[in-house]
Image 1 (cartoon, rainbow, N blue to C red):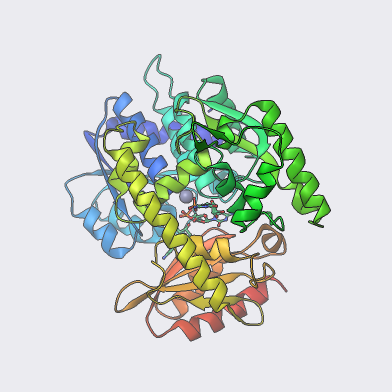
Image 2: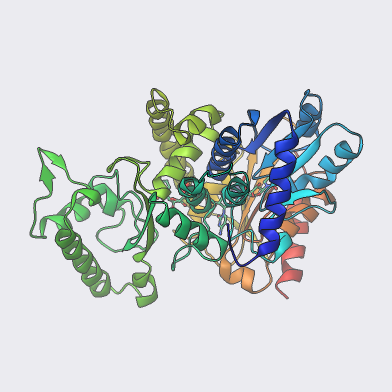
Length: 470
Ligand code: C5P
Ligand code: C5P
Ligand code: C5P
Ligand code: ZN
């Protein structure tokens, strides 16, 4: 990528050279939308460069996972979407001669160093909002291009990864991400537009599209099935085609304009504040090579589909979908998606019903076994700012991981980050204080702690957040 940070590209070149030296590479990646797209981008680039490889996924790169990797015969390991936060575990293995790590990641690095380390945070680029794991993998993929090759088509997956990690803001993707968008547009695989930003533009029938949109609540439409249908019936166009509800993608430009203006009028009339109303329209990204009306066409829906696979131990399905090996994989992914949606909505209902315990600087809930530990962070993120759960304090969410361990997910807001919040430091320090480990980003982080230490962990996190926001 010929971006404004030549050092990042130079590091990518060094990493690419090292990978070309290897007989074969073990590619290890994280089990979420960003991790899957990272693996898809990296593996496609390795394949095109003629480097043989095998791909594995892990929920968390901890001591035992790194030991497992060290025990394989591979002497070159490419880590994508994790690795930086675990450098203190990886570096000693490298020194012991187990393998050479090449890392394309965007998480806060641990206190150790290695030569082939590609991370935006090392070059003054924000890893929480300007470049994702898939973005770092894309920068590496450009450096891996063989003579005359063109990997810019991989920008589409890199954007899915960035949006999957919530790097899309009201004004769209920024910084290094925006450059990747430009390359994807130039390569003809991406389209950027101003559009209604409600979730489900490609696949949701219009009434559900409006009813389920929860980011901006519109009285009488949001969470109101009859209200949504009534609102649509008052518009002057066909709502059904061949007896089926039409979707946002099925509407003509004029029909979309009609719907948007009616929605804005209703929002204003119902007293929705102007700054909330503005959030209804924003920058959207479309994968132009994918079929209209499918989850794969819209980056948000694509990333949710991927989370529905990888966070349920079916990363193989998500990777196959990313790589275009669709026979069977897409059907399986859709089944997993229905299950994921049900889990999200049941989890969200439970949290709203239960509420959070509010401390001086943080709020928290303990879902025990009611919410799967791999999605408790997504649920926590969706819960804040809705129902009785305030956005003004970071939220900590506990879920059981095993008989001995508890997973914690933490979510903040950009407003709090601007005031000094850094959840990756909070998760790391508070978890280490109780015998666990954690890390992540300033605005979203996680940890694993021993069962029974939750109270002590909350107290420690509360103290640390208090210090940061002082
Ligand atoms: O490993 P990791 O980068 O995957 O974690 C990303 C997680 O953090 C995602 O679940 C994403 O939704 C969350 N996140 C967030 N808000 C942000 C950035 C990330 O909730 N601004
Ligand atoms: O699952 P994922 O982390 O990709 O979800 C990202 C965002 O998409 C959620 O925070 C939520 O606002 C939205 N979403 C939704 N309906 C779903 C799944 C996700 O509105 N069924
Ligand atoms: O799992 P969750 O979506 O809450 O993860 C949020 C962030 O925290 C991710 O970036 C993840 O990689 C990081 N994390 C971590 N160590 C853990 C758990 C999560 O660094 N033990
Ligand atoms: Zn990521």
